[in-house]
Every structure is written in C-alpha cells, then in structure tokens.
Length: 119
Image (cartoon, rainbow, N blue to C red; front, side, top):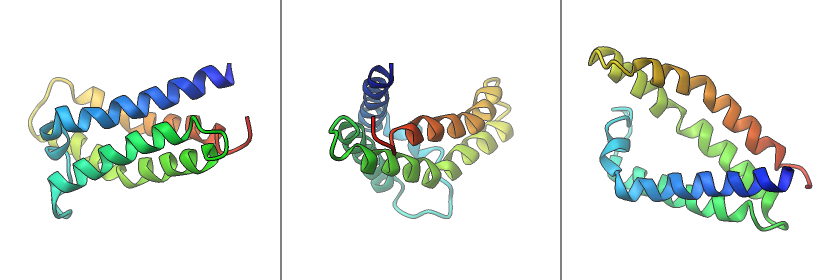
C-alpha cells in the first residue's frame, strides 16, 4: 500500500503543478499582496510541484522530494489563508471549501512525511 500511495502522491503533485500552467490566474488570485512577481511565483511553484512529484518516485531521492513537498506546503500556506480571506470578503458560497483546505494542508504534510523515511 505504501508504494501505491507513493505513486498517488507523485501523480497528485505532478498534476497540481501542471495545473499552474493551465490555470495561472486561479493561483495569482490567491497570492498574498505582500509578495512580488505573482505570475513568476505561480510558475516556479508549479515547476517545483512537478519536479518534487517526480523525485518522490526515485528511491534514492524520495526523502529529498518528500522534504521538498513539506517545505513547499509550508511556504504556500499563506496563499491558502489569502484564498479564505478573499472568499470571505467576496461572500463566496464556497468559503467552506477554502476553510477546510487549511487543515487539509496538515494532512498533506503528514502524507509527505511518510516518505521522508525509507520505504
């Protein structure tokens, strides 16, 4: 099962990274205002998600990829907060999804944490 979820982890991040190129505006809308170069940061984070998603499939690099995913999830957390704030002020009916997304980050970190150790 651990290998299956490793493949699923990889697929999840590769697809999430690819989505940054197909829907950059979605990500730019949730970028905190204090950050510069929103478009560039969206592209960089997409590239990192793809690379890290691939790296977790390589046994000798898996731990580094998992740690990279954990670091990335921590770094992008302010964007998830910004999304919830934006949706609150916009009276978005899907605000509950943005709020649920916040603790889901902890689950995603825990999922990657599993792969910081040998399989």
